Length: 417
Ligand code: RAT
Ligand code: ZN
Image 1 (tube, rainbow, N blue to C red):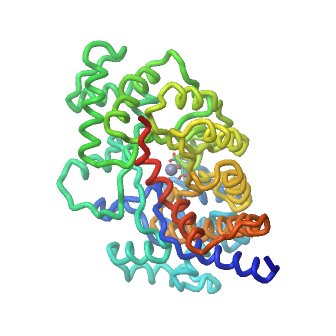
Image 2 (cartoon, helix red, strand yellow):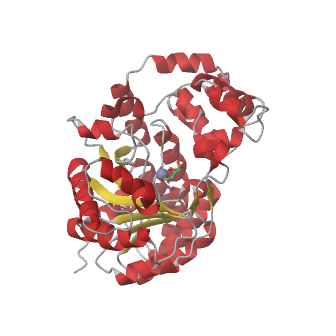
């Protein structure tokens, strides 16, 4: 191929990535029927926990005083410190600029008051459609915890689901904090014992069955600390083996494992105080090997674990790698991870999820991810063409659809018998 043809191919690949409609497989957004739980607008964008963590590197205010402020006051502080007094260069800061710009709010004016006024003119239903459209997202997965006192009551009423918002059943307390969550289940009418004796395991399964039928999840999910081991002799492991994995097999649901989060490294920062650590992926290897009929959707937080995760995916077809999670969702690392994944496992993974907590973040998270992933894919197809393969537009489009949702759907359908 001539250099001009290669450049043309690269451009077509990038355009395809720009245009593809995405299935976002992990977010913290809610169906609009959940009312105030669906966050949106400039103040929620500014008080995102990623920005709170960055703001505290400059703030001259105690943690307690900060938390005592109203949302708007916190947003003012963050705006002044991270956007006015310093240039908004970090990924999370740049995201706010990309979002405002895409919404046609001129960030160059730096007029927070005018931005607030603009948002006040929207209603949530219209704005939801507007954001999904601008982000090119056709559907997304929420994070739904039965243990969350604010969302539970909504599920317990009858409401009309917005099919663009699919459920994900989050179970961290069940697996990681049985001493407490067992008691909670008891108050909800399940017979439990702290040592898992008597009917406890079947009662946990009844609880899982009830929530599965109530919310119709795409998968069950849990985030794990870096010191998670498998196998191990803990109550949590018995819950995993005897209740969660059995339930997943019976309902043909994947279990999403988000590995490597150290919760509350600095508890004074609240949600912003979590950190990251390197995981022992031999735990994941054991799970994939011992449970060949269970499906595992996995993302890992430590950069140091990424290659090992790809190698495991080459060994186990019941493992689907997804996303550049949280601290890895910065362009330099997304680029390196996506390149490595394509090189090791081809098209059989899901390069990104947004993890959006605020609706409007879908816009920047997907815009930034598309830019990086599009560039990496352009390189890869150019290399393939140079190697002598005929790269057709139709096949490029097929692959890109797989990477942005299709491979995830195929993995869910995969028969492991
Ligand atoms: O990315 C985030 O917003 C984190 O706070 C976590 O929620 C993480 O994504 C998780 O799902 O545990
Ligand atoms: Zn998340």
